[in-house]
Length: 62
Image (tube, rainbow, N blue to C red; front, top):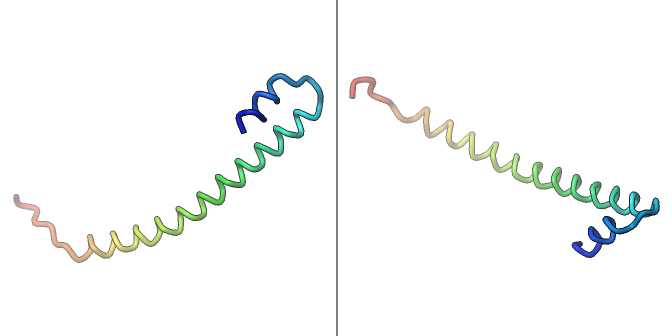
């Protein structure tokens, strides 16, 4: 990947733009996949936390 990026920086023709576009599309796809994966786990965790907090009583007088 480093070789591809340095090649992009040194190249002055239009093919480098296509390479960089494909690289950016892959990175955006990876970011979306990670976000979807993490958000499902966070929803479950927040539901469990909400249930736990509802069950505990807080005494306002310390």
